[in-house]
Length: 562
Image 1 (tube, rainbow, N blue to C red):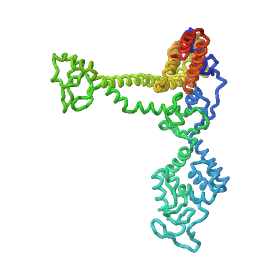
Image 2 (image 1 turned 120 degrees about the vertical axis):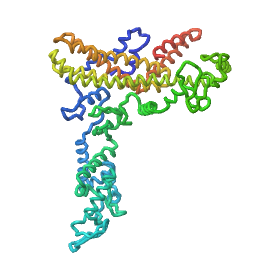
Image 3 (image 1 turned 30 degrees about the vertical axis):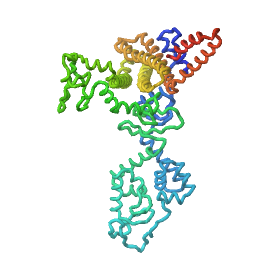
């Protein structure tokens, strides 16, 4: 992959190269290679939709595993079995320990071997009963909840030995299950008794419906209490992501095709950091822009102070009932003081005189600032939303290509569908690039440095231009071959062109992401180098007037994109 230096060198404004060549400076490595597909390690079934996996391949190296429900159960069972074997305890007791220590096997081992008795007392795995167990000679026992008398075979208890009838146990367990996931940490019904209630009691006494709820809580706890796992936030998706720590990239793609950031669980947003995304989302959903619009496009009624928008040409304004105050839009004074002598319906001599005296400067300045702020936000938001719309349409076009177009092309041109993979690769690259381009507008909105901003906007424009070129190729030029009457040599040329565009676009966007994640550090480096060169040139010039420095400074300014 080319470095960020290549971006700068490729887009040197003094190079005199054509704009077409600027975008293609990312390199022309062979991107399409059917026999060299990466192994992502988490797709096991042949019928799984691989679009999310392929989208992930257009980002950084995969550093996570997508787990289905059966995978989660298998991992959970393996952890329980490991703890049970190492500590020589039952699997029911191992489950209680792991629940208490948030499914950290190493934490369980450390705590247990450090002080087994303390762990048993804390978790509720008792060594023996705290009340006498009934012997062979006992013919009846009293339930500790309903206080009815029962034969011993109808009395149940956990490790503590407190006796309760099966009916009361069933009601107690059902109530706690319906109360939520707190049932996983259930204790003996006896007040102040620390003995834990294990899975065996739930299995024995809970109804089928309650068991389903309990095991749903049980499997969810394995993900939600695990620091390395998170559920996919897509609606209706039941996959979990097991994430490997120690990586710079947090973008993950689930098997359901939803891509999101592991760190903040918002949609995938490289190259923008999580704080900027949160700030942007708050701005999009907050009332701040409504207030800016009100401030920029309305004025308060001088009497009731409610904001009023001017919707007609006349300056004569009437506030809505019950206020009904009539005033001049320009000077905000009572309309009764106006007439032909004040300039008529479309002007106001009072306003013009007051403006010359500076009476309206502050209000006009605030209104102008609000208007500029609103226009700037609208500029970035519209382009952010437009790329999101284009991305969603591209995802629909990808599905249409898979379900209809590839089969049709295969029939017309006599090419196996496996050899038409370059078309889906192009659509996947477009989908990924639209996502990146979308978030560059949020990046640009919060980019304060003017020097960097000018260079950023140049790179962003080149990225948009190149992506449009790829999008047009796969969207428009492909249609010609869908209506062809038979095979054509032009189709092979189209394949070469589309494959090359896909490769170049991929390389450029990867370099763009790296440059933005590094804070456009190359701009600072180039600027510092230019300043150093200017200083040296100034010292060596005769007369010491700095003319050479001034000339060199102009050149470096162009390189920085300023």
